[in-house]
Image (cartoon, rainbow, N blue to C red; front, side, top):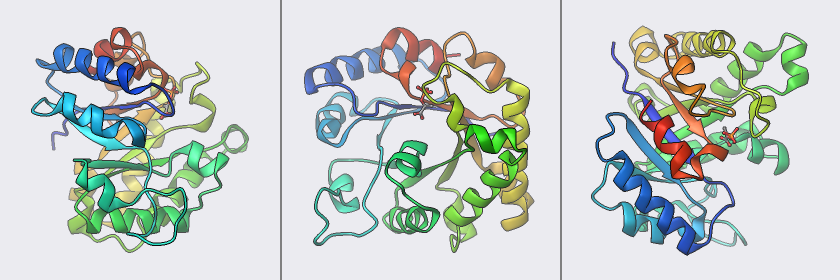
Length: 249
Ligand code: PEP
């Protein structure tokens, strides 16, 4: 089964409106002939601005997080309804910064996954082990647990709206990248988990992105691996000079 490469930029808590508009404009121009699937995920306050710039282009609009409830007394949270209203098509859930700095657990992430899918959003579900877990030989087990708990109760029909991003926590923003071989081994094991939970067709179809210090000079080797179907890019997504070559690898 052929899977389309999917390159996503997570802008994290960077950029003002003016800077975001300039970056989005450069990406629209630079990626118009790009053949892969593309996404940018700006901060909530930038979404409307970026939506206006990428409208009609081949770049999807994403958000970096979302509340687990549709609406109500949830100070400081942003609702799926508010995101949809701005044209958001995809939401990143379970990013390691949410898991480890803001203590989001699998149950909360699973609740968000269900809500996003119910509203027709695509979900990028992030999973990945800490350095100590890798050193203890637990990387596969941790990812298996995060995938199965994150997707608990999600039916096969909805799985086509789910992308998994494997992001070893020790590789995010550190300049350390998993070797293509190590990343591919975890991707294969995640694909195996999807196979056991859903079946071989679903396993063959699911897009699994790699994230963790992806740069223009390492993207091709990573993407050449059988089970790596794209990238979730943090730092290098903040500049057209680095994101465009990654996106057009
Ligand atoms: C990320 O935050 O998803 C990420 C992979 O960041 P970086 O590319 O900076 O490591």
